[in-house]
Amino acid sequence: MVAREDDSAGVALPPPLVYLAALLAGVVLHRLVVRFALPLPATARIAGAAVAAGLGVVLMAGAVGGFRRTGQNPKPWTVTPEIITTGVYRFTRNPMYVALALVQVAFAIGLANGWILVFLPVVLGIVHVTAILPEEAYLEQKFGAPYVQYKQSVRRWL
Image 1 (cartoon, one colour):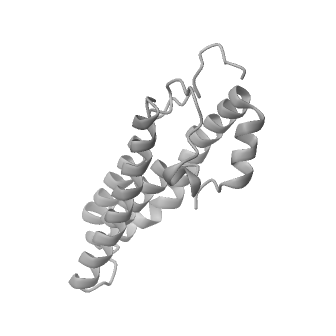
Image 2: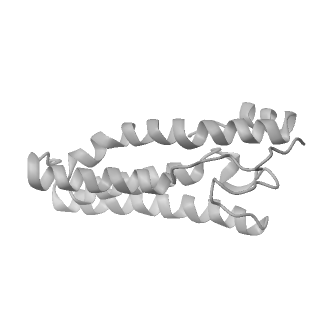
């Protein structure tokens, strides 16, 4: 293992704020500029939002649970003492970011707001550049071959 001088991924922009900004921007655009309603009946909106939110909450709980079990801080700008490869981390290397995306989808469906969905690829791109790439570089530098092997066996998103 090789430790960086500051021993963190150096993520400066908290990813949850990126998701929140997109949600708020979508609401503002929809209400004050141009409505972009998703044509869904109320029952479908409620069911779709509930499923997306439920999946997001379960995924987030599994990810946070993995951090708690290993005594780590889930904030991406803190030290990572070990790689988590169990639980939801067996299926995705970024379950928290996937969970936040699902919650954003839930809001879009529940509010019938297409702008929130339009912003999702933008959010994913920003999170990819500002958080995921620095995290991956940090983990590869710190853990070397074990992390590279993990990257090769588990997808970044899904």
